Image 1 (cartoon, rainbow, N blue to C red):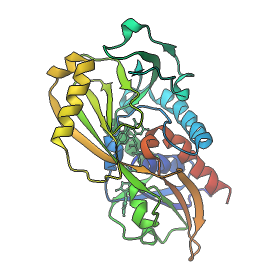
Image 2: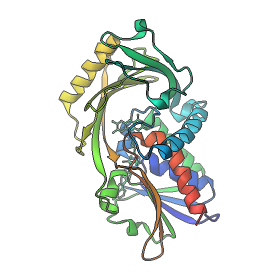
Image 3: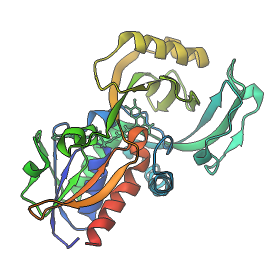
Image 4: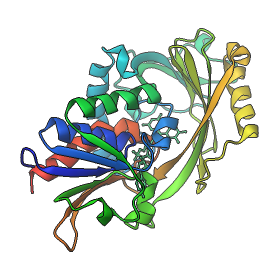
Length: 317
Ligand SMILES: Cc1cc2nc3c(=O)[nH]c(=O)nc-3n(C[C@H](O)[C@H](O)[C@H](O)COP(=O)(O)OP(=O)(O)OC[C@H]3O[C@@H](n4cnc5c(N)ncnc54)[C@H](O)[C@@H]3O)c2cc1C
């Protein structure tokens, strides 16, 4: 990438805004085009750092570790929306800890007395929690400070983003049509946001492949309660029955949540693919298109590692 080179980033979710910030800070002249600013799926994330259920594993681990380093730095500034938070991931059966958790600070098996009723194993660790509305605002400010610009517009094709020597495709599920990529599929997720009745720790159940998740993430004045994971479903309409079940599951583990006031539902569709796609392609007119999409349920976790990989691919041309 040469200094001042014009780069158009399509997409303003966590993938697009992080990539745009990285490229602008490296000296490119970056323009973001996106229908939603910020992307609604990114707004809906919980979000906890954790490279789970995402392939290819070796790359995902590498991208995740790089992002973890940066989230730890960002947690020193409260205005970023990133907080290092201690909490428990627990299971009703005797599950081994997720491998990505074992190297996190404070990792240890829980005492039985620390676990809610009905749970048989659990692990405590400290991890970045990311308050997505605040964090996406922070990324927009950071991009602006680096001279990047943002335009809200729906594109019918990636070529409509040009003319530009370089286009970076961070369109999440939008890549289904824009690439087109039939390997992408949605996994719908719903969160309920409530007022914080005093929680300072997160909780997450290892629910395996169940569509019904159980987690809560405190973000200062609010708590994000989860959740759902409905494979193949892309509708973003709120489901009041699902919301009631999420609240009930969370309140069973943390009774203070039963009294919390519901503020909103956040719904997104995880852009899921057999493997995350970060790779360059040259289009017929000579434009270099670098794809960065398909992060499934780990797009926040992988965001900085993938953004830097895009920068390396452009520098290596
Ligand atoms: C309920 C839920 C919980 C989650 N929890 C976590 C978590 O704890 N940790 C974690 O790491 N990840 C989590 N995720 C996953 C994470 O949210 C996604 O992987 C990530 O947000 C994907 O980001 P993205 O930028 O690729 O997509 P998006 O946020 O969907 O952004 C796509 C962007 O592309 C734009 N776009 C698409 N098509 C077009 C077009 N034709 N023209 C113009 N613009 C277009 C959109 O407008 C948008 O700006 C969760 C997701 C959900 C739904």
